[in-house]
Image (tube, rainbow, N blue to C red; front, side, top):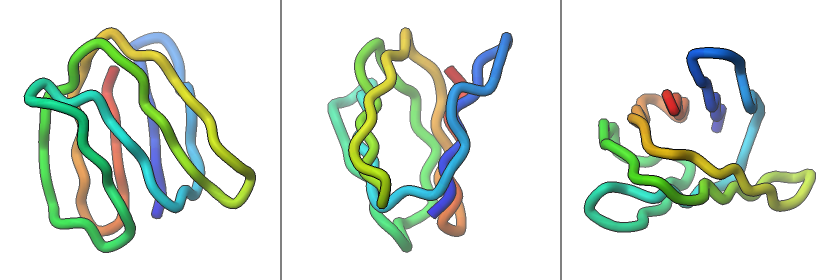
Length: 76
């Protein structure tokens, strides 16, 4: 699935991933391939992703996430 992490200043990450963990405002949650469509707010925390290249982490101060048709867009 495709993940984009965007800020007002720059694009932080664009790429194919296997799974991701997000700091949701109601608690941490994971997204896998073929996940149901959601829109959620994010709290300050760490986005953890797993891909064929390995694991990565990105710190965010909050934002919004949209998951739709195996595409994740994070506005942080």
